[in-house]
Image: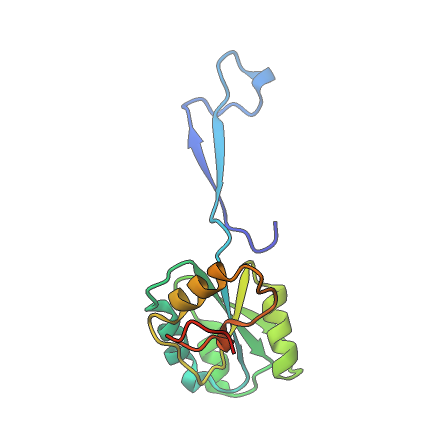
Length: 162
């Protein structure tokens, strides 16, 4: 259940530990999960914390809301980046620590920790437009034969894959 958000809700008034130990019905626990997001946005970060908030905010203001953001700390050594990542708390966002192995391996670590069905690699110093994810997902959904294309290969507004 790695990467899944699970919550439990208690129903009933008798906190019995098992059905055998009490004469009345045991409480019912209903487990709910946040459904897997459609898009996992992977942001590798190595000593570039100064750009991180702008990249993350560009995703958070997206008109398309079915996403998660995974920031991979690629072994940053910069004190300001480390301080930012240590306390980083934005909606739908989590930080994954990694040893410094470079951009490709940091991206792979993000993908390994993702749960989306589509991956958007986003450099820490890049931003997306508010409609980008919605347009990209619409194109990918219409073109179901596309298998391993990255969302960044979609030319915004053209309706074609490059």
